Structure formats: C-alpha cells, structure tokens
Image (tube, rainbow, N blue to C red; front, side, top):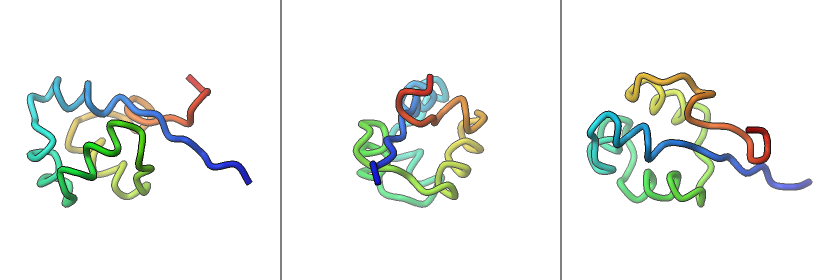
Length: 71
C-alpha cells in the first residue's frame, strides 16, 4: 500500500498567530522538532495532534491539513 502524504499550511497559520515553533509545541504538548518536521512534511501527525493544532491556531482541519494531490 502506498504511503499517504499529508500536506499542510501549518507554518503560515503559526506565523499568522505570531507563535514560534517552540510556543506552538508547548501549547499542543510536543517538541519543537515535531512541529518543524510537520511543517516540512517529514512527519505525519496523528489525528489527535492535528485537532490540538487546529484548535490552538483557530483553524479548521481542512484549512491546515490535506492529503497530497487533493488540493
């Protein structure tokens, strides 16, 4: 089975909220490195983490994350 690639606009949304990677990581309970990897598309976050991030950034899931090739 082919791996699903999750694309995102996390960095843009984080900057709009004037948050650093470290600040966002602390708010959602992960490391700064995890946020960096998600932003670069090198880590597919769990649904639970996606929901936490969306809530902190005041965005809908589909505003932040989508499957590569669908948008």
